Amino acid sequence: MSAGPGAGTAAPAAGRARAAPSAGPRTRDTLLVLLTVVSGVVDVLGFVGLDRVFTANMTGNIVLFGLAAGEGTGGEMVRCGLAVLAFAAGLLAGFRIARSPAGDELWPRRVTWALVADLVLQVVFLVWWAGTGARPGPWAEVGLIVMSSAAMGIQTAAARQLNAYGITTTFVTGTLTSLCGGLVAGERGGAVQRSLVIAGLAVGAAVGAVLMRVSPVAAAVAGPAVVLVVILVAVFRLHGTSQPPKAKVK
Image (cartoon, rainbow, N blue to C red; front, side):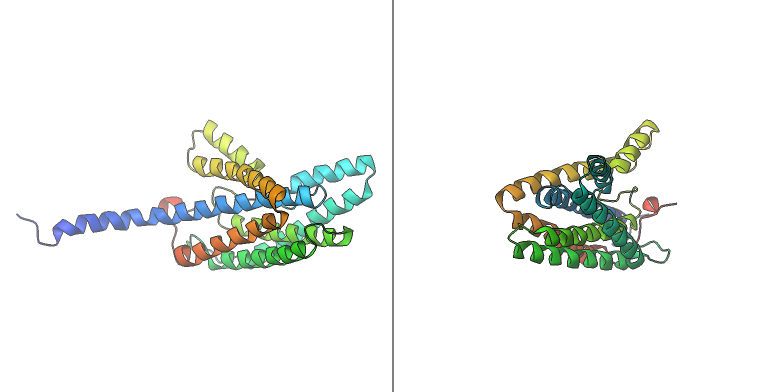
C-alpha cells in the first residue's frame, strides 16, 4: 500500500518536534554558565577593588573573617561580616521572589524577576562605583560591599530555583563535589554542565582581572551587561517552555 502525499513530510516534522525540546535545557544551561562568569568577575572586583572582600564567594569571606579575627584586624572583620550578612539577606529576598508553585516550567517567570532585582542592584553598584572613580572611601566601600553581596545572594537563589544539577553559579565547591561523586557512581548526567560552570568561574575571574587592570569601571559594567543578556534570552526563548520528560527533577 503506497503512502499518502503527506507522509513524506510527516516524519521530518515529527523529528523536529522531538528535537525541539532539547534546545530549551541547552539554552538554560548556557545562561547558568554566563551567570557563573559574572560571579567570577564580581569576586575579582570585590577582592581587588574593595579591599580583599569576596561578594559572591561567602566561603572565602568566612575564612577571611576568621583570619582577621586571629590577626586582630577589625576593619576586615567588619567588611567580611557585612558581606556575609548582605549575601544572606539577598538569598532570603531572592528565594521569596523566585519561589514558584510546583510545575514543569523550564525557566519560571519569577526566576527572571529575581534576576531583574539582581540587575537593579548591580546597576546601582555600577553608578556608585563609577561616581567614586573606582576609588571608594571607607564608608562608600562598605555600601558597595553590601550592594554587591546582596545582588549575588539574589542571583544564587534564582539559579537554585531552576534545579539544574544543583548549580548555584556563585560557588563551585558543591558543584565539583557533585561532578566527582557522579563520575564515580557512573552518573554522567550533568557532568558536562557542571564542568562548564566550574570553568566559567575561572574564566570570569580572568576577565575580571584584566578589566580591573585596564578599566575598573568596565569591570563593574560587565556584570549587569551579562545579566541583562540572560534576562532577555530567558524572556524571549525560555518563558513558557516545559521541561522535557527526561529533564524533570524527581
